[in-house]
Picture 1: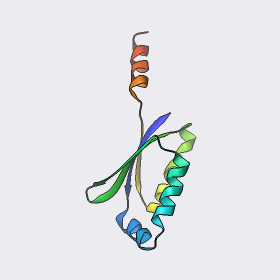
Picture 2: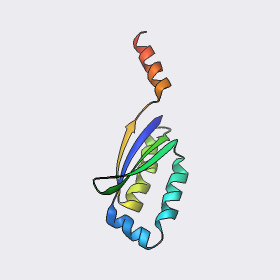
Picture 3: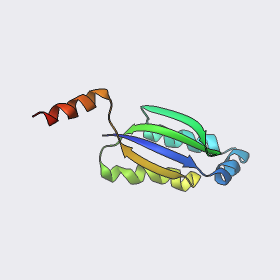
Picture 4: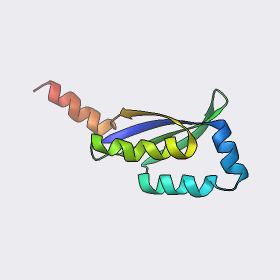
Length: 97
């Protein structure tokens, strides 16, 4: 199933990782494991944020999706199940049955 992750990364934690030269490797490892369909990066309320769209096999996959962001970046993570246009049309079509 498709999921949208909203990730807000802790500034102090990330500043230290940037200063130590560790941020890129940690980030690349996490993103490599997630294999996102899309990823966007931006600032929100003065903090580093990202939105990532991934495929999740099932609910039991959530720890492996969220824990790396919590452990490595002291991040806030929100997960939203979402769909694309084709999936929306499929779902709406089921209402008429």
